[in-house]
Length: 240
Image (tube, rainbow, N blue to C red; front, side, top):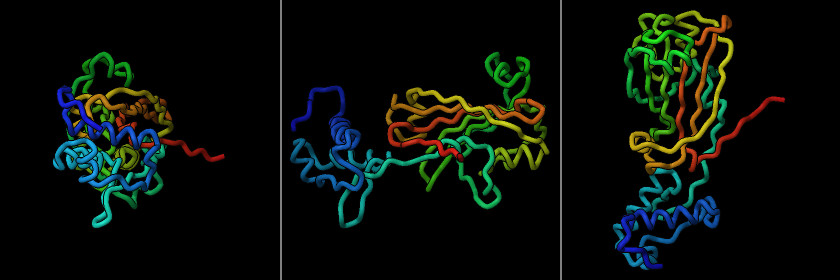
């Protein structure tokens, strides 16, 4: 197979697209050992470095994995329970840590959209919290959260480090939480989102907007969860 060397698409990306096509179509199933770098270099008539870069991109994105001395294999699609992804409460919250990288913790004023979402007035003060959720040190979800400052005075960065919001809302501030409503949509990755999640720009993303209310029907939090869609399989598990 000969690549289009005059194409504006870099050669390593063309190789990656070919390999992704094999994976996404199901022709290369999970556990399949892909051809060696030498074999792919011969197939595409490009250097080993070009092939190595394409494979490394797919390893970093989770589509491939390497076994020392054995080769490179197709990874199984990651399965994620949607209810766990957006849950504000987990019965193991005291036993587990929830590793995040804090991206932003600041006080802002509510614009028209945020005021409407949180049932506040424009210019009311909010905490804006942005975190990158990590699993085995790999970025999996970008979280953006807006919380009314009036409900949570003296909230600190230490409060939110690696903690579920449930711990903060119910334990530190004594709020009785009632429901969380989640809206699901899709979008393509911006440059910043792609960089944080280590995925290509414009790749499909799953977006879940969560609104958490107390038993008094007060909205205490609006959060948006952004996760890669292409390399994962999401499901809901319902108790009957």
